[in-house]
Length: 589
Image 1 (cartoon, one colour):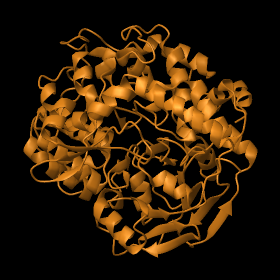
Image 2 (cartoon, helix red, strand yellow):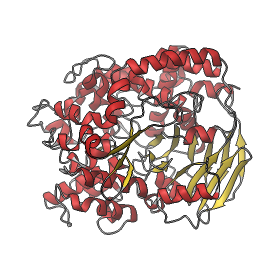
Image 3 (cartoon, rainbow, N blue to C red):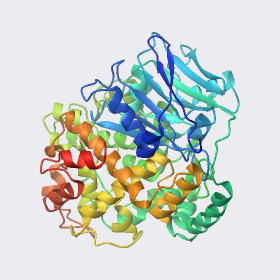
């Protein structure tokens, strides 16, 4: 078998029983691995009524057929039902963990049940051992990873939760290779609900590739394409993801003070250029990555990884904060405690606006940079103000009677692009299966960065077709699994070539896009059965009714009603957003 290792281990933590599963060729061809295969397996194991924090819920760690073979292929995907959104959810992370896990001879692990006491899994060439983690419970993610490596192997890679996951904060992350995050959707809380502190892996097995010489030549061409592309070859290499701060601010869609404004007057002070000047220690990259968009940084008090663009925004402009040290140390705290930085900063911003309008009992003001790290800690431990913020902005705003002040879709807090400045990104947010997310279809590429071509960001024309295409393309890439930044430099056909060289299966471009559409439709079908409707493909009223009053995106609102019906038609869904029986049959779901 080429690409895949050929087996997945299913573990019941309640009983300790392990079962080895083989995935037949037809299922691999239809769903590949990673996100696609994970979603398919999840829908077979759990119903749309499964409580995300119950022992019955499944938590699935998967690699893909390309994992561990070429550049940027160290990623892994975690699939479950999100306790934050109640949607089916996948969350991806980089680093080395995916490649190391696959080198133990398995494609992934399915976890159900709940251990009676804290445990971690140690997987090697010889199999999976369930080990006590009682001595690790309460430790932060860095302490946990160091301790497990000392107990197992210096070459081990570890994915773990921190106190946030243990305390079942609804947006708790899973951290691997120190500061890489599987962040969105709160799957760290699912891990904590199972008393599972970590998964450690150390393997030495080789992944079989069908056409190694052909792949080697292809990779030479890919290296040139990556280097030639202005984003992957220059911008991300020079400044990392924070290169976006001045760019997005200049277009007037850099969300400020809970998305009330689209321009932050001190964007320069928290920009990638300023990080390079004041904090940068060295560049860093994931497994075999030629881009190296990561940044190792150091403040006066601490050092660590990041912050990335989304995090700088979440603790910066979003909160009215221009203190780069405070932003960076809040990022360090999230990494160590195991929190999704987007949802954490977003929820704090919601609390600030609630406080400003007199709806929240605790005083917390815009620009309160000296309080941010402490609030992050309170959230992770569910103490003080964090007791309420730990449930996310949707539940917080509803509790205090101002649901419109939560900037979320389906319960997931939105990232750092105001949709009033990019109509396609607005549609992508609204129709994302896992909730408010920019990664389902990154329309900022064509609408702002001109990749692969420039589109009129204020126009709705043609956006449903492009959003659907990018959603399918991205679902395919998430199932190979490769870094999504490669989509700036490589087209569908190049990804198809990679897959064919490794697996030896002759996929066509049409087939891989159909795989993506199959995955996206299966996710939608699960959500529909879980009770989600057209009404959930909505944006906060702020974006539909309140015009931005300054900057290059001023006087704009989102025109979602001009796009949604056509988007459903393109997808083969009815006017309520339900996949038709004909579509289900055509995709062979």
